[in-house]
Length: 281
Image 1 (tube, rainbow, N blue to C red):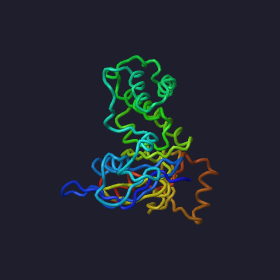
Image 2: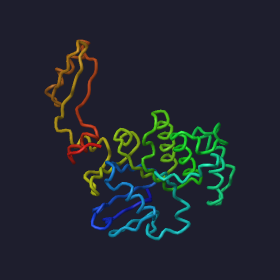
Image 3: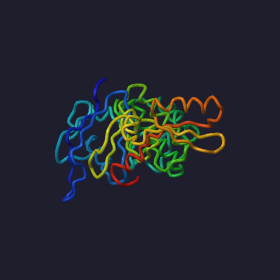
Image 4: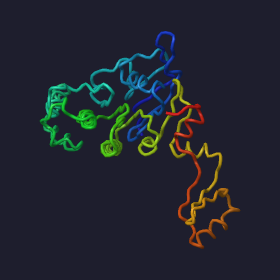
């Protein structure tokens, strides 16, 4: 698969504070890459570097093969972004906001209705932005980011503070972009969301990547207990070693119809992050 985003030893310093300390990563087409970490870890700064909004103080960053410090119009036209600063025009309607976007990008206005429909805003097409809820605004920003069918999509906390139904709608749209070959980089501090959406993740803390890989792989890597937990119908919980010698005991619980549930003990991403950094999210 073609690599769409890459960073090699990227560093960023603001006065006497180094906020990125040698970040290296890559994202290929048809992949969702998650950048996870608490507020202030450097996630948004890295996205601003990759999208040409900031120039790094060290290392190299490329977007679709172009140096991110000097993106030309042809590169920018192939990028979609959902950032904290939405840039919506408050007094314009949803439809008119997207119309302004089509004029800027030189694309047909015929796709506006479909874009609003896909994010569930067809009935709000004529509603001014200042009357929209937070979730509706976020869906409008996503519709705008997807209208020109970008090859690369940057999502900065795309579901932060949203209700579960709205978040689920946005998740579906993100997965749809992945399936059509878009390279997606998203930042989030929601570990459950990352495990659901991302093929690979990087855990970022104080400007450094402390772990990277597939979510399930990372969790298995830190499964120090390596146990199997069996919940029984009588309310008891039995913890057994995840090894061949326990197989007959486990089988007997099943034969006797006593098993209410069975789980392995690998930690979730939140637990792994806390182990690595000594802090929560």
